[in-house]
Image 1: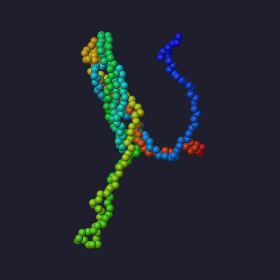
Image 2: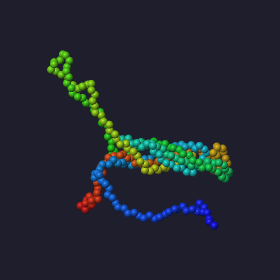
Image 3: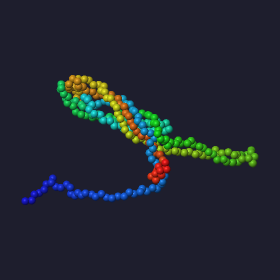
Length: 262
């Protein structure tokens, strides 16, 4: 009697093999310019700025306690104003707050559900950057005007041998320039948050559920809807600018000769 195999007993691996390692050989990179010029990001400065925040956060429902807070920095502007070396920073801290909201309770217990609130806490500061590299910055030169000399005849009443020697006032000639500088930009390295959150309207012994009705709970419990947040942010970042630099040639042979000669 033949047995029919169920789908669950069918093999999943159809074929398997051990692959052999293939050989390789190094290839010398093709060099076109021995001493090329390159346009690369140059670090103008790297600093940590301290940002102090004080904000009020309101919850949409009563809060028994805050369970967890997750924070992320979001920078929307990082603009270096040359040649003042002043850096304008603008952004916000994204906060996701997980909290417990009471449902029902008794004299010795409280039953809650976990909710979350996401808010953006904005900030805007200006700080001075200590430059470690010289920025490539050129101001637009002033516009220059010039005239052409001309000699023209004089009207009647003057000698025929005389001429009017002057410039042509009907012309407008000038030299003007536009210089386009590379705009410095920023890269975030790290952020550190130090915060203190304190309820402003907590009433001990008064517990409200998500509908705002008072429920029975242990005497030491209480709910609130508003907190005041004091936060210190330490933001570390780089300020860079694309610049044209000269790539020096430090070959192995040259370094060996220098080492032997020394």
